[in-house]
Length: 396
Ligand SMILES: Cc1cc2nc3c(=O)[nH]c(=O)nc-3n(C[C@H](O)[C@H](O)[C@H](O)COP(=O)(O)O)c2cc1C
Image (tube, rainbow, N blue to C red; front, top):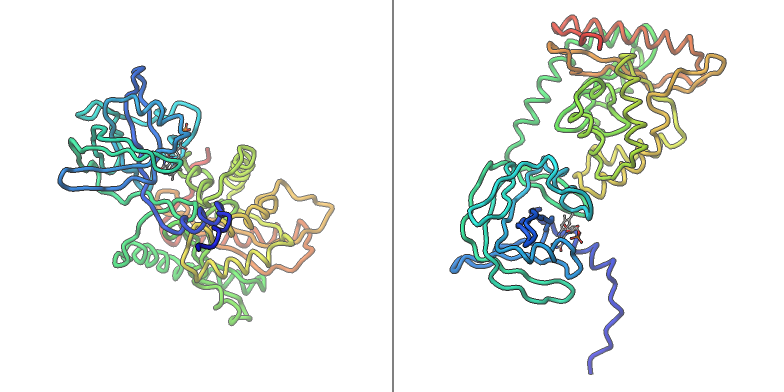
């Protein structure tokens, strides 16, 4: 006799299966009302070559599917890694999903997204019940590749891209340029450390991460080595100087880089912080009780394979630091614990190529003392800007 089945754990089912990655497509059609409809689908699959069949699994409760089912054909649009915003728009239950998403009609008469990686145009072949979902089989009529860039992937409840193991060259060539700049910056950083008795680091952006490429510590030379090569997420509140003053696209990318949804008020908070950093042209973070805990996680982040789960964990910690970064003017009647001060090094087109960062400042500093550290750091960063032939952007 079979043992009675244990009560089924839905959460565990989702969690375990979330470790299997899927691609992300938008399945579109023109409903019998004439309106274009589309839904995000992770269950798309190639089924048969002869005859050419594909499938996807709409949920029985999907309102979009109810309308898509009335279409005479459907088109599968493969999303690219840089189309997470399109994915979120088509996964929403409300709103016009086609806003700002250019499309045309496929040969069968279904919406074909202009910026998709590839498209597969189908007639409905069969729709079959499978548990709480349906299996929609499509017979392929026509298909094509529009732009063979890396696809969007869904894994552990987060989004990411595909990076071929053998193609590390772009990362390295980025890094090499930064090492050259850091080499020029070195003498200026060492002068700062000697003058102030503080550690100074050069940080840059490599492949969506902040990387520490050089450091100086005056007389305490040995203390910097552990930090060189440290990688941090280039996500709020970190790295404000690299994004401050850039266009909306760069700012939105920064705001959405943690696999964590941000509330509108948080986005506004960070936009205000960016405006402050842009007009000051320096950056400040005050010490938070959480800093040591975050630092340990960042250590894990430096060495670990990045996964959505790790990003969410680090992201949640970073969120707790947010009030401490780029605060408004400091109260001159109080003393302050400063975690770090940053000053930008500008490249030829006025973009921030590196940030010099002062670290390990003594606690309870007066506003005058903090201004003195900051001014010395800004002078060093300006000297590096001049030495590499860069220039600050025009004042807005
Ligand atoms: C990554 C991802 C994969 C999804 N895969 C499917 C799927 O395979 N089948 C499905 O019915 N819904 C899937 N959805 C949900 C729908 O895209 C979307 O939320 C839904 O169409 C909107 O709800 P509605 O159809 O009830 O309006 C997926 C959503 C995301 C974000």
